[in-house]
Amino acid sequence: MNFEIPSYLDKNNIGPYEIYLEQVERVTPYLGKLAYWVETLKRPKRILVVDVPIHLDDGSVAHFEGYRVQHNTSRGPAKGGVRYHQDVTLSEVMALSAWMTIKNAVVGLPYGGGKGGIRVDPRKLSMGELERLTRRYTTEIGIIIGPDKDIPAPDVNTNPQVMAWMMDTYSMNEGKTATGVVTGKPIALGGSLGRNDATGRGVFVAGARAMQKLGIALEGARVTVQGFGNVGNAAARIFHDHGAKVIAIQDITGTIYSEAGINPYEALAFLKEHSTLKGMPGTESIEPSSFWDIECEVLIPAALEKQITEENADRIKTRVIVEGANGPTIPVADDILSAKGVLVVPDVLANAGGVTVSYFEWVQDFSSYFWTEDEINARLDRIMREAFDSLWDVKERHNVTLRTAAYIVACARVLEARALRGLYP
Ligand SMILES: NC(=O)c1ccc[n+]([C@@H]2O[C@H](COP(=O)([O-])OP(=O)(O)OC[C@H]3O[C@@H](n4cnc5c(N)ncnc54)[C@H](O)[C@@H]3O)[C@@H](O)[C@H]2O)c1
Image (cartoon, rainbow, N blue to C red; front, side):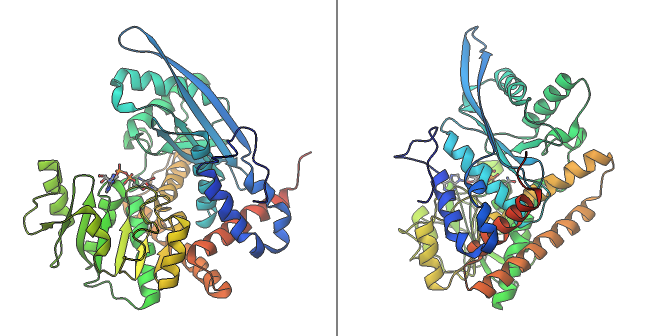
């Protein structure tokens, strides 16, 4: 690799950031004169590692490791979520922050990329402990975040309540209410309508556009969905609402299949009542690994990273994969799918609906004027469609995958901003 690994990463096991570095290397030949600046994409602008000490309910003190990484701010303030997970590493937060730089540039939002995390299993904390953890972490990273500097949002294991605490803590330290410091807030605190379904909605808009390009009708199209949480559930409902047939749903509780189609609203109600998808009337429970063998027109991985690998890529019988999750397809599987003629709509485009409505939330907070859900959905749909079309043009022009096209477009946009700004001093 044409990059000197920084001392704060393990040279023998770089972790997820290595995947990002490889992606940048892949597109460098397409960047023309802008390649002069490409090193700036390989190095995060700023990394803050913090100690987060809190009193536990039993009277003892616990320390947690926290991070905030601002990968790039050439196009605007850093923007990206905060993840609470016991296995979070600096390399992972660096990679996630870099992917936010790419995603924000793909959909043309005036942001750079950032991400944060705390190494903690939040299920082991009481509500009080979680609040103290969030408030101390916010204070520690408060020196670099702000509505015009870096705007956190929810990610794995963080939610609107955590965002409310972050907003309040930052505001208390500033001595004034600053709703625009985080997005994904509750509606009562300057959150945006439409945020809940935004990612799933974006998955639908990008997926439907891809189907249109391939001449696949939405009506009756067979859709399979892995992950039935915020993203998978909304995507399944919206595809169903537009006449597609959801024939398989997989989550951590089981995998259900029905050739005649599954009503996702009923599946959600069943899941809520029984805490499992297994046994839903009119469906057949199948082995989780068989999910990948189901013939369909659209497959939506919306659960975890690294789900489509060299083990199952060959078995997949679909026309389009729309990546709701971040990083569900590993690079070697990408090559297998591309050789088979499967169109992959990459995560940096497909799941950008969430950050797009986060952007709307931030804009609404600044003007303290709130839009209707219809206005939000119409603006989201337009941004997703335009982003898809500009990537499609690049894909056709260079004869590359849609993922490579996304990186070409995004890296060029970030580096053009870098070149115009120049180096300070
Ligand atoms: N929520 C957003 O706005 C958003 C935005 C962009 C990207 N994403 C990405 O989308 C993915 C899903 O996020 P979410 O917010 O829907 O999470 P979530 O926690 O709401 O849902 C996750 C779903 O995945 C399922 N799942 C977990 N492990 C599984 C396994 N081993 N096999 C099958 N299913 C499994 C869970 O049962 C659940 O249904 C993540 O990669 C996330 O980073 C989310």
